[in-house]
Image 1: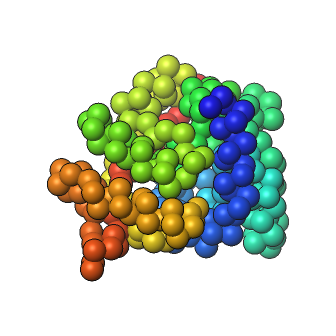
Image 2: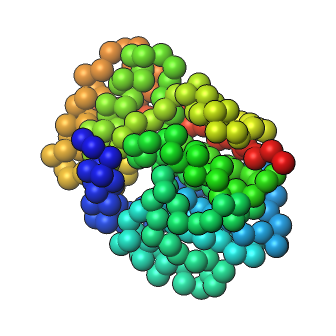
Image 3: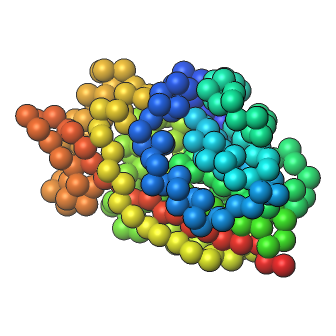
Length: 257
């Protein structure tokens, strides 16, 4: 599938499930959002960009401290729905934009954020290049995303079930791959955390799938090896999957003066 088809699939998926991402407990994780503020320490004079804003949770969080927040998303219907939910936050502006080709001039933003989205991007290098380009010197970039384990078997299993659940999933990258990209495009890592994230199976699957498809993903989990079940902490009750864990990486980087 070429890049344009991948992006059209992203738009199709998120147009259909726009409301479920606004209400998602995973995306509205309070601890996660508070940590973004702690790491960025946004100032009241800042202009901030939230890339692939989805349900707008990060944009809303940033708007409490920054002067202006630009919330962008590739999917117009998703962005319009989010703008409707956040209509009372007057300092958020909404722009339909491709993360790999941002419609902003160089060095426009004091900070850039992108959360639980880069695994949809077909060209992560273009994305990181654009982040570097639109950041002001000494600007800060926080990225949070699901990551693939460094182990090849675990990587394959994880990316396979994500693709089964969401056809707009392109690939979750390994931390080692992200670090190489950040260095290549001139962003210096200041702080990082990798952690386990527990997902309730049915809520996770039903955001994008119908019952028959959910059962297919569940069967894939249930038929996996003991090693895979152990790593992803797949839990069951009465032969049904209840929850599992994936790896997530949060990184703060900066653009040198």
